[in-house]
Image 1 (spheres, rainbow, N blue to C red):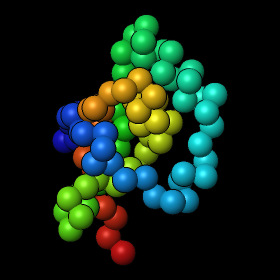
Image 2 (image 1 turned 60 degrees about the vertical axis):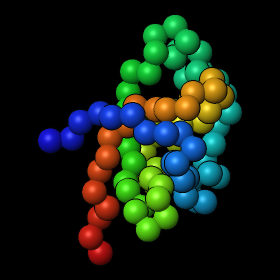
Image 3 (image 1 turned 45 degrees about the vertical axis):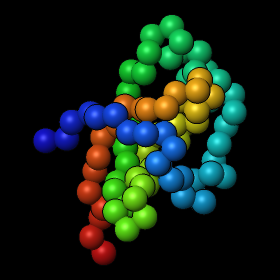
Length: 84
């Protein structure tokens, strides 16, 4: 069963292709929502043990909202990497 846990924001790597999809207005909207309600949905990450980091799978705008708010941790779910 997948469960939410806290992840350090600085240890989450965003793949290059995903960085091109950033919408600053959406980040601001999420940040404003968090100020009023807190984080309501978790991001998804997978472990990259070789580099001592996590790779973002889902939730780029939520991660950027956390950074905008100066958060050091974010709620997330650890998922397994897909087998090739």
